[in-house]
Figure 1 (cartoon, each protein chain N blue to C red):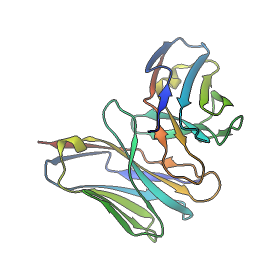
Figure 2: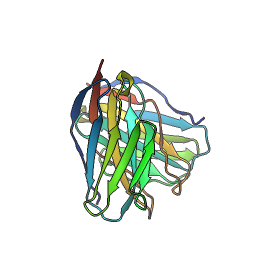
Figure 3: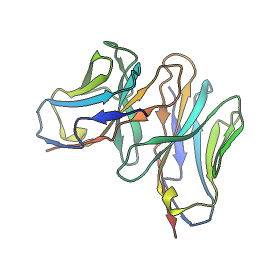
Length: 113
Length: 113
């Protein structure tokens, strides 16, 4: 089955810096890659996603890139702000069958003012 | 706006007790999921349901069962709670297998003494 590895487990940056979180997946049939953000004490929420027919997707200060050949994808946050502090989870799923998501282990991002 | 609710935010039970965790969604979603969240392990899928009265095992079903008698409600059952089931339990729903976004509930932090 699918296995998703996520690095780093913790990331500390200064406000205004960029942050990058990386994930690798094992199943070459996976073609959907979402990112969820979980603020302290709150529920995970989808912030951005990408499908395998696209190499990059942007939404304001966040972007996701996908390298199908290497089977890895990354979340990029520019001009970080304290409210970006949260745990971020990557995930992967196939586009066949029930399309279960397999999540990475999470990255705790701390943005210091 | 999708709303996923869980019956309790915090629950304390004793070893051997039968425990019911309830999840309700109000958007007529077909698919529902139960995850457990543990530090360093991310979100792991326990069980999922693609429609009423349908259920499938996820990646870590041992020690758990589920029930989905009505479309809006998905229950997770711990037949005989054990200390290693102390965790945060998150419910999620999704419109159908052809859609992407999973909407999470607020979570139930279960402690088994």
